[in-house]
Amino acid sequence: MESEANLHEIKKPIMVLGTSSGSGKSLTVTAICRILKNLGEEPIPFKGQNMSNNAWVDWEGGEMAYSQALQAFACGINPSAEMNPILLKPQGNSTSEVIHLGKSKGITTAKNYYKDWFIPGWEVIKKSLSSIYESSPNCRLIIEGAGSPVEMNLIHRDLTNLRVAKYLNANCILVTDIERGGVFAQIIGTLELMKPEEKKLIKGIIINRFRGDLSLFEEGKKWIESKTKIPIIGIIPWLTDSFPPEDSLDLIEKKSRFSNPEIKVGIVKLPSMSNFSDFDPLENEESIFIEWIKETQNLKKYSFVILPGSKQTIKDQLFLEKSGLSQDIREYSNNKGNIIGICGGLQMLGTFLEDPYFKEGSKTYSGNKIKGIGLLPLKTTFIEKKLTRQISSESLWPCHSKINGFEIHNGKTELDKTQNLKKIKPIFKDLDLGWYTENKEGGTIVGTYIHGIFENDNWRDQYINLIRKNKNLPIFNKKSISFKNKRESIIDNLANEFDKHLNITSLLN
Image 1 (tube, rainbow, N blue to C red):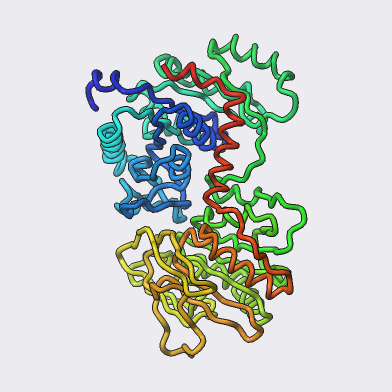
Image 2: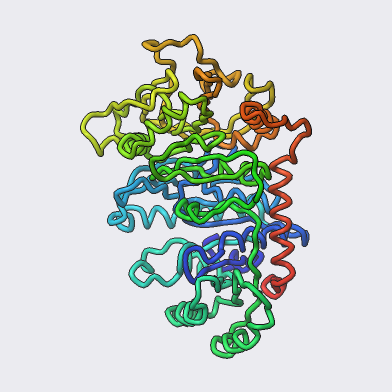
């Protein structure tokens, strides 16, 4: 892989760079992956370094960013941590957990990252590329950049943009978001800051999220092509299909798309929230409207409330207590409310959280043991080793059904024997994957370690029917469309829209 000869033998990789974060790189890669799969190619997604708490676990138990997993699904292949060899999981105070090839390697500050992790990071990127080409010599890599490739104060330590592009001599596309405004300055400024040998790699420009009549941009297109000598290979219209955002901050802007929902779901917007892709199956249910809970309020308007996963569970539990949301959740439960906690959310619903190794944000207060919300008689101790694995089990409640998903967590949760344990029951045949209990008024309090629980169609249908029955709504007897089929349909629609407006064939030779 190190030799020039080997690099010239591989199919020319395509790399998607952006003029900024949020320009649409991730969706563009997803669309190109499916377009090339449909053309009979063997596309494989790759992002050298991603920063995200929205993670996936591959079949070897390796962590990777969910966006690369989604791109692998678009290619029709199983996700692998090699597709995202470096994952940085932010945990506040300018620190991140460093994941190399799916395994946790330590904690770094932003200040020390370049000094401590740049050289091993570049080695792990090259190792992953070698491994991918060794196992799939006929593949075409579709590579996603990160942020902007010309952050001049950071460019010497940039592992995932132009360094990868030059190493692979990739055909690069520059994507810009016209919705943000300033599209001419974004394009010209980005190209002007590149070195001549870097600029030569840019073979096409994509204008993303264009609203209105495409013909109205014809003059702008000519000006950009004349100024840059680079063709605009696509003007992509505004697309409405629901895709998971890369950044949890984008969730605030995410609005439910359905106008007459029967069920309103409140999801607590934790400061260190993780794995928000858990809720994609609910986003695509026409009877459901999702709102994000960011401050103390009366929760009785919600049919059920979700406590999501957290990268810093103790820190987020302290936020719930300080903000008054813990008390809101307890009062909601006492008023026959339905609550479901996933991973960190499960841990917070218990009685105690203990962090002897300072894994989950307990350095921010004195002592390493705090009270949970106290709605489930469970206590959690955060251990040194993180558990990451795919799950295949069977549910006992609210129905008997096969269950798939994955776990990512430090904590070990067990029944708190100082509490009344008569009402708490396991949800799954694997007894440590989740529990539920009923409150006094007939609502349910549910906690599970399984990320992706709502992707299990039968389980999701039965849980929603439980909520519908609780609200005196008619039960859905017909099975809903499989979420995985729906996801495939969304990817197909995305690829079809891109294919209409994108000339990708010029980059394949």
